[in-house]
Every structure is written in structure tokens, then in C-alpha cells.
Length: 202
Length: 365
Image (cartoon, rainbow over all chains, first blue to last red; front, side):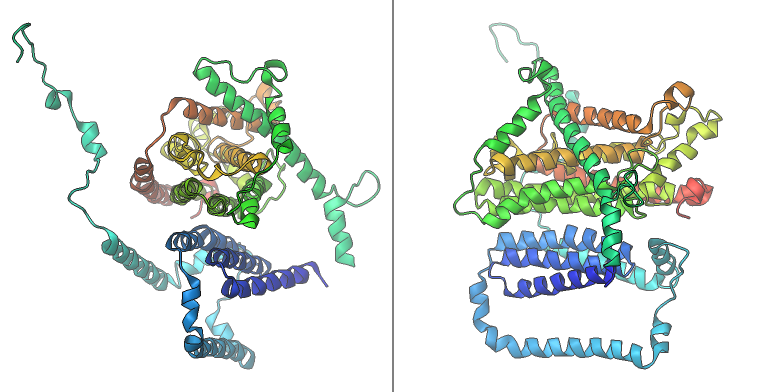
């Protein structure tokens, strides 16, 4: 057994075990933390496959940002998972069907690679060994896949604008600060120096 | 069995004793770890002394000469007191959180080059690794605040998490501008690039190497990075997560003894990590400021530590001088000022590099 093989089995075993814990943990916060552990091990597997850029990106994006928001929501919402589990048996068949379809699709893809290798060769670009991982991704992402890349960016932009439009409300009775107005204020506009004669007042 | 032997040699080998072919990694790690912890102890003292000096106090001055051993006395106190775990807390996560904070803060130091070739792991995606590690620092805070099962820690951890996630974005963009100029994510390459190109070379006075460093051409980014680093590490004036006037002690309220010490240690080590990052990205890393004999005789490690300490001095002065921000102001400056500014700078720098062909070995182009 070589060292990479050892780490492969280590990472995959922990990934599968923690993925099982995600769906079986009683406490939703624990479930999210197990999800993070799964992400970590997936990143380790990426690293073993030589895709260190993707591995680190997985940690930065999914663990560092997405999972933090998950954790936020789960902590704040105080979801009662016991009541959610009530209809478990009722929804189980749908879950099984979805899982079966996913499994079938994965098998189809992997099977087609085995049956006819030219399918795999047609969809994947050969990796240039001379350039590093990140440069190689950049070279195809901004040339061959530029439209897909920009399209994905546009979809994300629309989603972001949608989220902002749905949640942004300007309440009329809330006092807001505008730093530009505050900084731009002059003494002459707001202050008036008055000479008051003693004994008379204003 | 072969791979176990080679792994043992890699980790434990000592060539001088005729055993192994290289110096084991473990000894290097221990050297870095111990010197880092001792340095942190004195940095903690320096922080308190500087703060005291600004307020015309003496600061800690009882333990040892000039109070030099104060941090070690604190360490003993933290280690010997009883850790109190709240009854309603999630015990495993409660103890995991400080461990996570301290471990992650230490893990970042693996890729910091202290001098030419003096680095534990010289990986190509060094900066991305650092970004990944620092984005994980949030978890210690969130988990600690949640596991305490108490209101103030929870509010503090929510604040802190939102703050760290926000400022991560602008730090990432600042790093990207530096990367565009260098064309490599390796931290040693970033330092070498600052020696081999820059204003001093253009002016024909290559020995004035402090003019070469990126703080000059990327000055706005230097300022943004410094302020974002303060916010990212929850330093004053952005220490709203533990603002004692509002939240008692934020996410650390329920912590005591050793777990508290681990939080404290992790916080200071990640502050030092940010100082080291500033040094490497903008201040030329281990390079000497003037490339002439009396200065070049001093080894690179010394220059690195001197620069790091000077950046920390700026951190400490900010703590002593600047009043604490309000939370909405903090969020405003992060999202509405720093983010557009650094994003615009990425575009501008990329354009300039593409049009002029400046940048180390052609930059990213």
C-alpha cells in the first residue's frame, strides 16, 4: 500500500461516515458541522487527484462562505427537526426515486467512459503537464468555455439582484445616516452666531 | 513497509548521526512552533505596554525586569486554574471551538517564508491556502458562541462571523491585485518579485530596494489591506464581537482557564499571521530595505521579524488611538467602500499590466 492510497481510503471513509452523520444527526447544527467535515474530505480527495486549485477553492467557497451561511440559518431559525421527521415515511418513496435517478445517471456517465473511451476524450481536454493547475483552468475557462463561464456569471448576478429586490425595504420611519452628507456639512449652514445683549435675550 | 520507512525518514531523519538522509520535518516544525509561541508571548506584552504608554500608564511591570515575564505568569495562571464549562452547553463543541481557533491560526504559518528558502511548505498555491485557512477561522468563533448556550456569546459570534466573512472579500481582492503583478501564488515568488522589479529599478537606483516593494505602487491596496486585516482579526477599533460595553466579552464570555487561553493565543497568532502577510505582500518579506553591504549582512530572518514587528506596532497603535466603530458603520465601510474600491483596483491593475507589460516575468498575462 502506498501513501496516497492510504490517504485515499482515509479521506473517503471519513467522507462517507460524516455524510451519513449529516442525515442521521439529531441536532441540526451538528448535521451542518458534519457536512463541513464532508466538504473537507472531498477537498482532500481533490488534492490527491492532483487538482489542488479545486481543492482549495472548495474550502474557500463552500466551507468558508456557503457553510457559514448554512450554520447561520440553522442556528437562527431553531428548526424543530422532530416535527419535520413526522412525514418521513410519506416522503420516503420520492426520495428513493430521486436517489435512484441520480445513481443511474452517474452509472451511465461512468459506464459510457468505460464502454467507449473516445466519449471521455471528446468531453475532456487533455491536461498540459507543463503548466500548473490554476493556469491550465484559466487557459480553457477564458477561451473555450468563455460563454458558459459568462453565462454562469450572469445567472448568479440575476439571482443576487433577485435576492436584494426581495429583501430590500426602505422603511420611511427609520432614521438613516448618510456619511457623505454629514462630512459635507459646513458650519455656516447649520450654525448661526448671534450676539446677545445682556439683560435682553433674543 | 517501504513507504513507512521513507515517511519516518521525512519526519524524523537526522543526517548527522548517520540516520536518515535529511533533517526531519518535525524538528523544523518544532523550531517554528516554539519560536512563534515565545514571540507571541512578548508580542502580547508589547501590545499591553504600547497601549499603556499611549495612555501614560506603566503597563505590566511587576513580573521580571520591566514586566518582561508577565505573559509567562499569565500562561501559568491560565493553565493552573479550573476550566468552568456551563451546564447547558454542548460540551464537545464548547471545547472544540478554542482548539480549532488555535490550530487553524498555527496552520497558516506553514507556508510563511521567513527567509530565502526558509519555509516549511513551499507550495505553489500558497496564498490560496492562506485564504482557505483564514476563512476557516470563523468556525472557532461561531461554534464557541453557539456551544456556550448563552445570549451574549451567541450575539457576539453572529456579529463576528458576519464581520469576518465580509472582510474576507476585500482581503481576497487585495491579494488578487498583488497576484496580478507577480503572476504566481507562491509566497517566496512574491518576495523575489519585489526585489527584482519596481520603482528603484526604473529610476536606475536598484540599491534603494524599499522603493521596489509593492506598498508604493499599490498604496491604496496597502491601506485597504491593513484596515481589513484589523477587521478580519477582530482587533480594535473593529472588536465589536467582544465589545465589553455591549456584549460583556462576546463569544469568549463563558470561557475560562485553558480554553480561554487557547482563544486568546489563536487570536494573537492570527494577528501575527496577518502582520506577516502584510510584510510579504507589501513590504518585501525578508529583503533588506537598502541593498548595500552593512544592511545586507543582516540575515533575512531578522529583517522579516523587524518588519513584522513594525506592522504589529501599527496594529497596537490603532488599538490605543482609534475609538471603537459602530456595527453598521463597520459593515458599510466593508461592503460600500472597500469592496468597490478593491474591485476597481483589480480591473485597473489588470488593464495597466496588460497594456504596459509590467509585472514580474510578464505578470499573469
